[in-house]
Image (cartoon, rainbow, N blue to C red; front, side, top):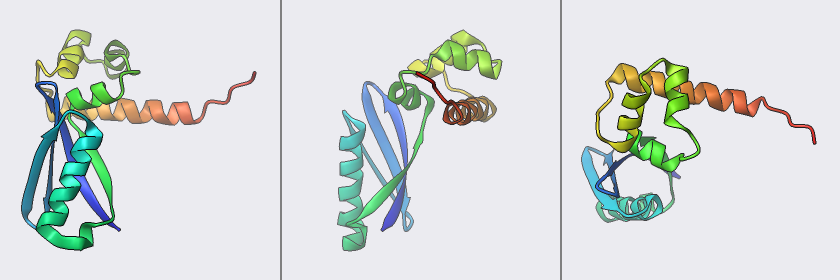
Length: 125
């Protein structure tokens, strides 16, 4: 099974995706993330044959697509955890501003830390 590294961005209400396979840049857009994956998968088969018939996606999000995908996360709480300005994080989530690489890394680290904390939770009912 081949792995496709897919970068997903959100612009103008649509998902845009890109990947590089054997020096070929494949790009497309769609209304949903699943539709985008199907289109990229079909492009991989069209350009590189049946060896891409069975694939798994390793997805990397821009901040707008990330906050759209994980609506449960509140930008104000992520801002609090990272020490970033809440208004700025909200603007990143809306695609109104672009975060620096350092700011993106702070947000990613906070999300990963939250994930580890959530995995450790035990509930008693």
